[in-house]
Length: 359
Length: 80
Image 1 (cartoon, each protein chain N blue to C red):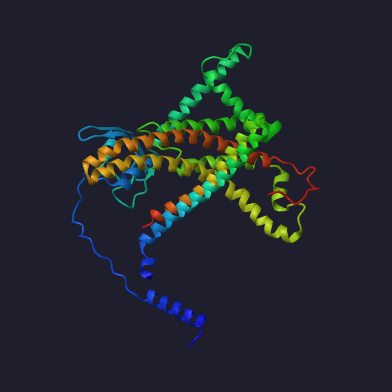
Image 2: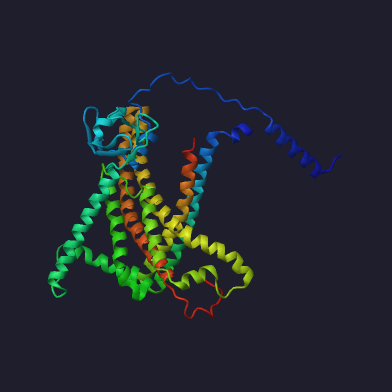
């Protein structure tokens, strides 16, 4: 008789051969009817994603008859035709106007060889401008109040709202990380914090645009943070990165590429992806919970109605968590930027008697 | 069998499972942070502010890593 292990090996080999050379057949469902599907079918993925992407109009709601939509101006430039400026209402539902049409959420020319430069005021842009205007007005008016009254008059009005937050950023984010350089970087840290916060808070209102859940937005913020870190880096930073002190040479060989990639690519990249993923995940969860109502409604109208209170309760709960996450994520972005700036500001004095280098 | 492995549905399923595993990792990591934070507050209640700040910071760093994995899963799900 063959031995036990050889038998097991034979069993294993034959099982693998049988599995890999077998044929699987799937039962076919009824073929989909040719032609357009019913326009009232609820395509969860398309409708959900259209709420988190950019668009050329503010879409508030849409019942059977009323379509509450605010079309935004389209500003496009193409080399042959020059600058065109018109309302995006002319391009809705795939219509063409002035040689342009909307394909896959972008403006393309009807003639595919024409290059189109799109400077439109999409809803992300408009919401960013609104946040910007609110930010500038709020802070300039509070600043002027301080300039007028000084610190001898008790704060009132918007000062009462902003002063605790500004002092929090200065004392918890700025001073522990930046020490005596805090005042130089406070304007930048405050701007980043409040801009992200205002944009996220606006995005929680119904009908608004999802600005912070846009990788271009967080990418630009991370790029600017990276530039601030680069411009405030001192010699000690580059020296520590490219020639870490206090480690043997072979460890240096491994450590130097890791440090370079980590400091120049991974840290700003992580800033970008952290903010983007948190925001878009929150929005998609809320939208998915509400889309569940419609998905159940497709199956049967009664189930849709019964499920609505459950879904709405969950959505409210997740909304409150979204609010908390908004504050936390803008605080985290600001804090991490401050930490990276402080790492860049370290000088090479007094670091030569180190224990093994801290990455 | 190879057919099943190379199917598009498998890619989407793999993406979803990966995102779920990332959630497990994040849950364990942030749970450990919470445990450490609550215990230190119990030992020294006057340091609540500092501990809370550090707890939130570390939790956000861990969540960042978990969300990398979620993004990778999402990319696998929307692949064509």
